[in-house]
Length: 318
Ligand code: SF4
Ligand code: SF4
Image (cartoon, protein in one colour):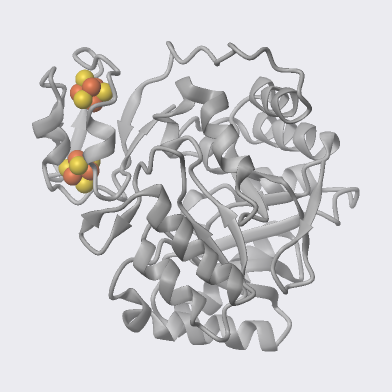
């Protein structure tokens, strides 16, 4: 698979990376050996870039897949939602220990929202110090927000940005409002001009665009502004589909069967705003005991109407 240098980091990554979130406890909850086997399959086929997060609880899959030393070249990215110095330092130590790596290649502030660059400055200082101490090689942030991506372009110490981008603009925000793929692309270009490495997330909009598989990938892989596109995998066949696509073997009318997929609300992200409940034509969304949205699968039509209106991309399909 083609590789690119990730901005000015000196780190070389493959055009596609492996997002580990889908196999973890918040989605498919695969047994560790099964998830590790999918990871090894992708690495053996040539992917060299893995993305995870403290919050995903997926370190055991990666540690198991990488055990034995044959995959020491693989670039690992993790991230943490914590906002203070000590919490971020602890998150890095946890990743080092749980991933059995002395140095984590890339460590990010996870899902930065408007106002948080100031609120989380302790965590950011920890990343700067961790890089200076050689605990991590590159630092940056992940975000769904155009305004944060724009701000990242001006952050002198920042090496890499991991923004949300897909052809439909699903989940892209500017402040409290929805924004477009073109808005995000303009912000990404500012990051590129500033020498930042950029890799894209949610090419399938959290699963809502999987039925438009090739259209989603055509867009993501056509963007020269992205050094890599992170794709979430939960099956060996999904890895093979991607290679068929990238190597030009996929039939033009092929799209994966998504009939067995279900819609879920990520409880960590939901803000209880009610937009999905109002948009649902089937009355399938209800308030759970925590005051957050949940989906009644007996009523859900998997129409996807709820997904684009969610301001925080809490609605996912897998
Ligand atoms: S996919 Fe459609 S039916 Fe299911 S919860 Fe969303 S809006 Fe309602
Ligand atoms: S639209 Fe999103 S944030 Fe709002 S209640 Fe629904 S899932 Fe939660």
